[in-house]
Length: 160
Image (cartoon, rainbow, N blue to C red):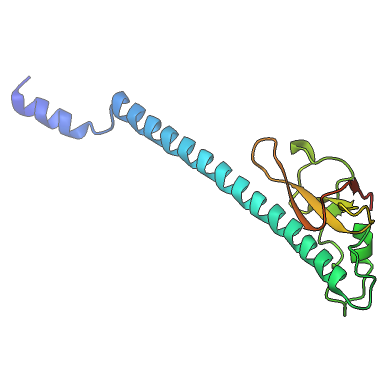
């Protein structure tokens, strides 16, 4: 075989070696792993922000309820009180805004629209002195909360 025939044979045989193909597969695997980890973190942050927003909204509605001059000046005793309000009330919560856990939030029951509603007696032992809203914070095993009014006394979970 002459040198020219070897060169022409090598030029006609084109393709990738197994090492080149393995390198490409490894690089694609690394990029996929980075993407999956990043996506999971972004999803967790989005869920946490949504749950926090839902709880914050309910606390603001409870504060508006307490500030309403036509009412007794106390905070609502149940979440159902806020959902029963007519649409013309600033404190009325539209249907579907949130649902009640009825028990302490956990990772298995987590939802961005679920809250745990507590009515508080406050330090003065007066029912309806304040409210506390718990929600799943999506970071480990963390339950976070917002509160309004006097929550220095006993807070009792409302079932509705």
